[in-house]
Image (tube, rainbow, N blue to C red; front, side):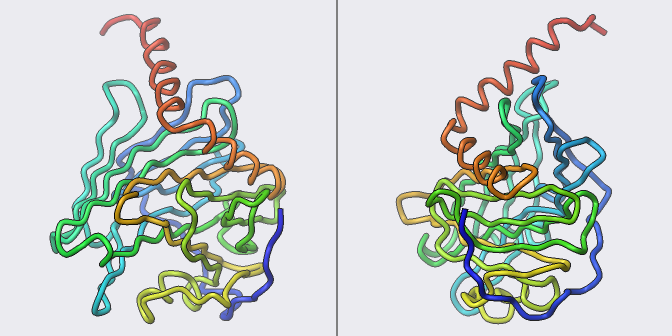
Length: 279
């Protein structure tokens, strides 16, 4: 695993805080080795827990969409949300976020890896106005490793040649975010000053000099490499006791394939339900 060194400005960031407690979904995999749990609200992922169900490692993970003439839209604030489980009793979710201005729709599916500590999120971006090339889609991740919004370090790097967004905390837990479509650009920054939300809202693009943010309230942002042909991507968020292990888990989860993982995820919950007495 390698990392570039370009310190962001604004350390240590504004005081950290958690997101809404009004959840619309929770989930995990029914597998003996599973140590990842997640929550959903406002059309995006909120707290993702690892390695225990009382150990939150993220505040949230959502999308920002930009476009011509300073267009800026954050899906959790500027869209209508529909959240539906794959089927009754199966806590895998299909999310539909349609922008309030009618310019785009985002379709997502979310599951947990059955084998390794990782979460998979399939994302399809559908333009409803203009042309596909008008829009750029960014994943915005707020690490809060082991229940701590402060004291985290984030950076842009790679695991064995696969570009990733990394973060580590003070309690021996790391995360790595990888995309099936290469990141077109990425940055790490301090929340309230050099984070991706601030950069995109003010300037419409990320700052390539912001590649690392140390010991603070940090944020990671990556532009998903959508093209006119490729409008669907899978994001893998891997966890581990070290950045290298988190990177390994993220890459291995991507390589395992979203459809194959989804099949096993759903089947595990179906089999468990067969053992229940009917109400």
